[in-house]
Image (cartoon, rainbow, N blue to C red; front, top):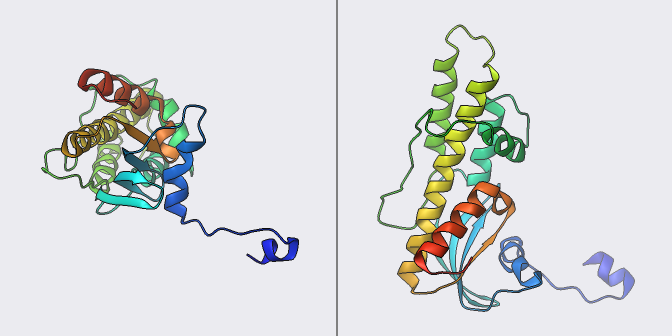
Length: 200
């Protein structure tokens, strides 16, 4: 506000989450209201029913870690540094599907809530068991763990999005936030949308 005042410019207060939520409206083909929004970032994982600017209803959110936070914490466990979400996704592309099986937290909870802290703990245990002598993980093991983690997160996010679409009766899903750039998530949501008849 001080900068706007000093420059004689108008200032508009925008909530951080609202900025995320409405950023897709800047796209060349902006989505029309109403829609279900998946806000998925380092700090937030929420599903919202969006009827218009300033008209939002929370459908569900994470009870602990956000999806992006879980990505970053898992990347750290795999020695990828911080923030490590994009690096983990690249590593996951080299992994073999189903080499490891990790839990899908709250997948069948019957609501639109999320939880990712237990998944991070499961990865920590998997990393510990994969190197009982404390030696560094070899590259294929790291890639397979990354793939197992990403597959688990994507499966949960896609299932909850599909459930939100069904619950609201809407036919449009908008994805916002940094994790929305994940190629695996985008491909899985596109496939689910094509299968169930909603636009992403």
